[in-house]
Image (cartoon, rainbow, N blue to C red; front, side):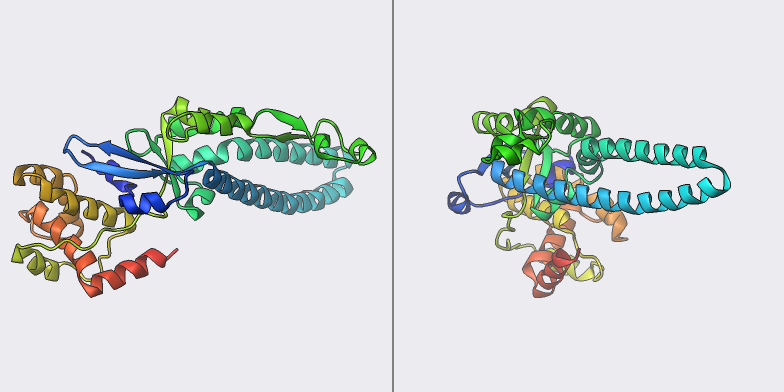
Length: 316
């Protein structure tokens, strides 16, 4: 098992699942260590909301930048027209228009792919709605998957109908160009409702899924009988506060270790332990299983740890 499989884990109880909207579902992915990670799959409504947020932010941000660039280009063209002639001014205007059109194409088609590839499966809209794109095995997506699933978004938007279809007044409809079309998104909706896991065509081809992190909650603190856990917790640096992803990994590990043998626990802990030992500047021979338990104990079982974790979670 690698740490990537622990990054976006969102454990939730069966009772919580029953109370959720029916557009969401749960997916359990077992690991070789016999620990089952539970993901809440995001349904069409929440994914549409995240997409609309991205669409709004991207278009508003891009065309605001275009307005500024256009004003600068007009000023430069005006100066060039006086000093260098109108031909140079026209050339600057043409180059600016071409750059704007190319930029619009790039932003529209590759914003989502770039964000998901760089920011671990999240765009701004997904981040604000607590959604994340993962591979079907629960791991982080790669750049190829991000590109494929976003390029195929066009197919999910089909069929397109003329915007005049929604005008009741024929005279008003005649004033709108017929080339302006509206995406019905029926293909994407039907595919998501038919395929298991609410996958659209892009997810099916890229081997990805979209999961919810909003309802993921940490389980009740686990008690440890070994007194060394609390002792080591007191020796950990006070300024180290596990982020949400590491905290979820610690919670998953602490919950699963009770059902495994000490040898298997040591094997699993060896994936995270060395990096944490180095980061926390501990003795090289520090027991990795004991370290993970101590970090969990300080983060979840002590009042100070809970306060620090809550403060870290509300920071942007």
